[in-house]
Length: 61
Image (cartoon, rainbow, N blue to C red):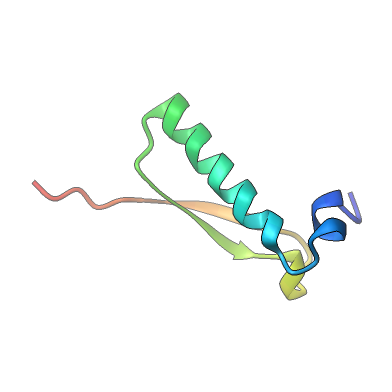
């Protein structure tokens, strides 16, 4: 997809926050994931594509 609706509607990258939150919550619901979604690359910042990766939370006992 060369011009996703999210980047056309919100060229400042605001939609990426929504997507990152949705992906994180989906992971928490389906896999008991505890951590954060890191948005490493973003079309709004001039990158070729938006790329997220997960970072597991450190657990302190």
